[in-house]
Length: 256
Ligand code: CO8
Image 1 (spheres, rainbow, N blue to C red):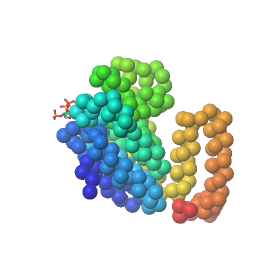
Image 2: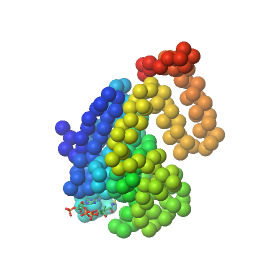
Image 3: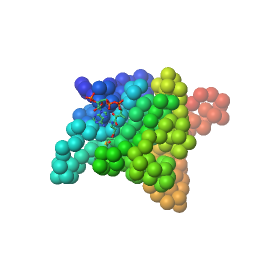
Image 4: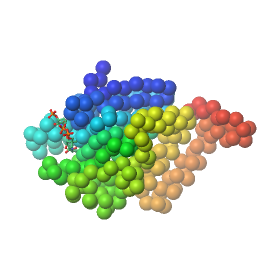
């Protein structure tokens, strides 16, 4: 049984709650291992249509665990490739929504950005404060934040270490929605249930194609999109979705 996370599945949605409240959900080795060991098998489970990753009212996660990391040497972090296993979380193909209330700092902000979209409570505070610790973002912040909010604002966040509130995060493209604090989980779960109600293969292909936009030229991305779109005509869900529209009924997707 995992110790630092709580995992519950309701229908097609798997809710993952980070559970180190005394350390503001600081991301240590254990939490990373538990997330990867628990979620990667579920990623391949056809009954799982969406993940929701959240923390608590005070913190989504206040960063990598500074106390665990502080005394490590260069050789420790280099030879063990510190935190490289987070890539396995980022590479999961089932959609992941980060529901962020309170602090999402350093590795916490980076973990939220590894998700496919961020829903921010009004209380959310995002930041990459590593510069104040004599280091810099190391779990993707310098790259993902720059892709999401642009160079100038990413520089502002990373070089001053300041925090960004929920309104600024939405305005800048970091957060998809800002939600009242007490409605964060209900609205996030509703969106997750909507995603999980669609055919999983088409959802996976659509998210992979959007991801491709961050990694390729426009021309290559458009070609990738066209090929993936065309390949969807090999699925039963495409036949069902289009037939249901023509017959004015709700589609019954089978995930095939
Ligand atoms: N690591 C470990 N413990 C933490 C962390 C953290 N990141 N953040 C908070 N805590 C602990 C505190 O030490 C405290 O513990 P204790 O009660 O035992 O003293 C407890 O959580 C509560 O925290 P505070 O008392 O500080 O709570 P406040 O409400 O006063 O302040 C803040 C909240 C502003 C969020 C404050 O806790 C803070 O500044 N935290 C650190 C934020 C930070 O610097 N994050 C970046 C960490 S570095 C990082 O993420 C690098 C990622 C890349 C690594 C890649 C490697 C390859």
